[in-house]
Image 1 (cartoon, helix red, strand yellow):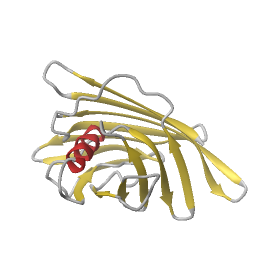
Image 2: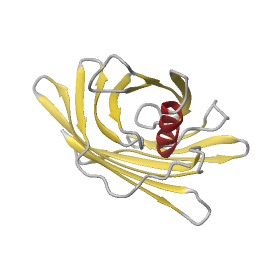
Image 3: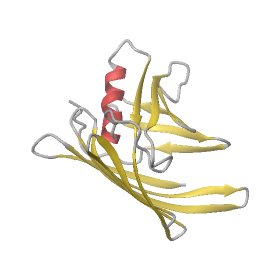
Amino acid sequence: MGYVQEHYAKDADGDVSISNESAMLLPVDSSSVMRRDTVANSWSRPDGSVINASEYSIENGVMSSDFSLAYADDAWQVEGQLQGKPVKTTLAHTDWLLSGFGSYVELKNLRQSESESGQFNMWAPSADPTSALPVVLKKLSDNENANFQIDMGPQVMAFLADEKAIFRKGTIAQGPVELKLELIYSKGEPSLQ
């Protein structure tokens, strides 16, 4: 149980600022839950590629991770800490990375194309801050509650998106756990050009 809030804003150059906040109660086992609060901020180019990013998480009231990502010296550099231990590394992946905004751009592109799927790489520090995560976005035709699916490592999300690529509802499955998601409020008109 929890909520996720996303906010997108364009600057004068067309780059997109992305703020994402979430607060969740997640099952740990059959009789206990964990509180997890996460704040992520990033910048994306209009094409959906990451410029830079940062994310921190607090679990049960204690800072569990804090990371930043930037492109320098022809490589993606990650710095931060995981459970109090410093992390400083270079991603093996040196090509562009898809941003959160970019996932909407690619969803719109896939929706308008003849292709059935697309594959990208994202930086997902909650999954693994030291590598680029391969992500597969695909169309679904056999599910009345979802028209797209995104595979991100151990997580699989099936979701319903409208013609403007706005998420309406979905489910995230990871192992035996399934979370149901539903749009509560949306303001503004997406600009995905």
